[in-house]
Amino acid sequence: MFSFVRFEIFRSLRNVRYLLLLVIMPVGLYLIYGRTSNSVPAMVAMAVYAAAGGGLIGSGGGVAEDRLRGWLRQLRVTPLADAHWLTGKIVQGMLMILPGVAGVCLAAVTTGGVRLGAGQWAGLAALLLLGSLPFALLGLSLALTLKGKTAQIGLVVIFFALAALGGIIGSGALPGVLATIQPYLPTYSLAQAGYAIAGGHGPQASGLAVLAGWALAAAASALVLWRREAGAR
Image 1 (cartoon, one colour):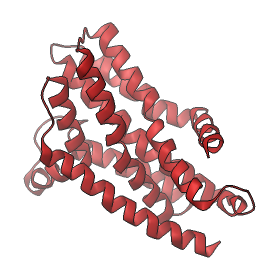
Image 2 (tube, helix red, strand yellow; image 1 turned 120 degrees about the vertical axis):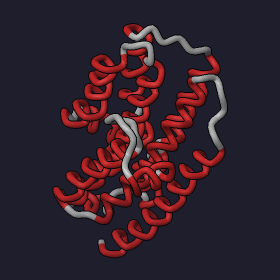
Image 3 (cartoon, helix red, strand yellow; image 1 turned 180 degrees about the horizontal axis):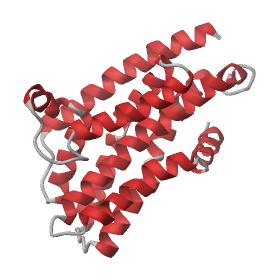
């Protein structure tokens, strides 16, 4: 399984669209808008952007492409077990956040003057890594639901919708019902937990519960969809 994960990660890193969308863009947005007195919140927002996008598109994008090319059917004749493939895709999605998150944090330290204690950095890193799990599972579910190019486009559209509604891109308060649902979105909850840790505080239990709820729901959905996909091959 580890060889499979390594192969998939290197394959994704060679994807220009991935590098542009999930590494260059968050770093660029931070450099343009984040080098101010509010540099720490901007760093956290762009790190959450990279974590959410890396998890969602990092896991789902590869599955969508594999389904489109018929690669999943070919895996049936390899020694790789279905469970190992599924686990590998989830791990891949979580690890794909690292280039973007590292790039944003490096830019914040070198150009934005961000200084956090060792405990804050460690807490933020752990939060972003674990917090990418619901997005990786959601990406997997979406890729197993949608087909072909529709899945790849859908992943990007849903990512930007979650990013905008979660308050990590854009500015200003959301109107009406959107403001009501915002606290229940994983992007918003991950960002709020990140702000708290970067500020030297513990994250709110309610926000962590939202992330856990999304992870459980997406895991159940991914499992059902994967069993259907495996049964159809």
